[in-house]
Length: 490
Image (cartoon, rainbow, N blue to C red; front, side):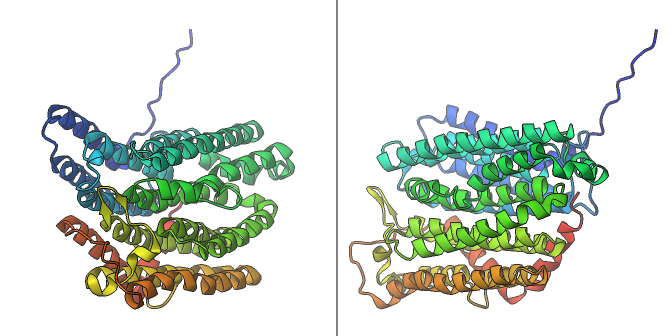
């Protein structure tokens, strides 16, 4: 009788040490919360912060020198996953640091489940960047999404927060259905869910390029990922959810979710399905143009700063999509650079808005910032830096991010798309500088009082401000880093 030999797949736990630590920290935080029911302290937040820093340290110690995979190809250990994981962990650390100050006014978030949900969501984001199989991509995306649904509605006593969570959940579940159906069609056309094997199959079977099943799967996946990155016309949820969610969570969503979704978009579509570039280039060209144009034009009319930043995030997704349309290796490096720059300037901007929290609600109207530039000078300087960077004014990280992406777009031959991107950048200057003008040239609102921020919040905002300026003044170091990480992409 013939015996079957079981071959154990290659397993490298170092590939998932950050995820293991994040999950362990989340579970430990929940246990601590159970035993400290009657004595809520900031210790829960500091334990979460310590676990996040340990995860970051483990990631740095496992710096990949070349592309590789583990767990039978389920997880990639290349520079691309390293860069996205590093970005997401930085977002996590700054979010927790700002939350320590935010919880003084919204005591409902001073609990284990709040920080556990953030840690679990981050675990899902990092797995999306490292996933080597479409099944793991979907599981990681749902792990992230379910946590974000709950976090968006964490202000249970506020109707606006509950509405945002319900809207995000219903539309997100619908988009996940499209994504999963797209994966099923891709499997039906190619016979594999492995991303590396998918790319090889496309190369060795050129006749598959004419498959309607494959093209339908590509459209379905674009819908699913387009929802997560707030791409027009799948962006309608963004302003309502950003406005209703706790401000700290809004910043976490606007940066971490977008970084993970763009990582999956590159990993699943741009790299293995590059042979289909002729089919999706026109669609993505139109999507990039509409995304940045709609985002910027609607942002002009917003009086609520969270809604303004929400439409701003839609516009920035359009800029990043220019790199996706270009599709070259350097364009992908530009996307990574932009994602890191966007994370720093956006988490900083939402962190400033969170500083104006109060027990009755939040000061989230642009008019509430009147006179705060002189009333709170350091806050005014930091907010100005973030607004200048979001507008793409040099020397800032936002300017260099647009420069790299626009340059690669021109090299790839998409001159008109880059021209439209530049025009949109000029339009955006108005609503970003409006915040600065209100802070320095409008009379102070006496009713708006910013409580003394915690040291961790000051440190987080200082890191964000310093990072934005550093990436703008010395961009070559970060550009070389992003380029190296892209060229180890499996």
